[in-house]
Image (tube, rainbow, N blue to C red; front, side, top):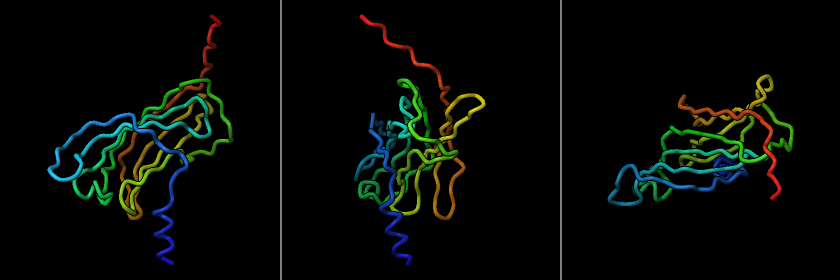
Length: 154
């Protein structure tokens, strides 16, 4: 039974894949890749016209190179309207938009979405959790749902 849960945790991943935009090295490592900050982008799968940019720490060294290191919990997020906003499916409050494993088994970073109907805005929260104990480290961003200017005919 426990083996099945472990395999499920290892294989579970969000359908949304992040595209790496760039990275900067923060700590030189003699063996294996350097520690770095990675900037990634992903589109909200249920809201067309929204792209989120995520920066997060990635641990290097031998363990990091082999995928055995645990990445730090700190992350930052900025979501922007990049086209006309169209909600393609009903939204659930606190719905997971993106999830990425940050350790071999027990830790992940997640982005969840809230719809602030009163202010007509979408709110995105990034945080890290662990099977036993999560982290209060988080970052938040909001996008007002605004009309997108139409392109003028040339």
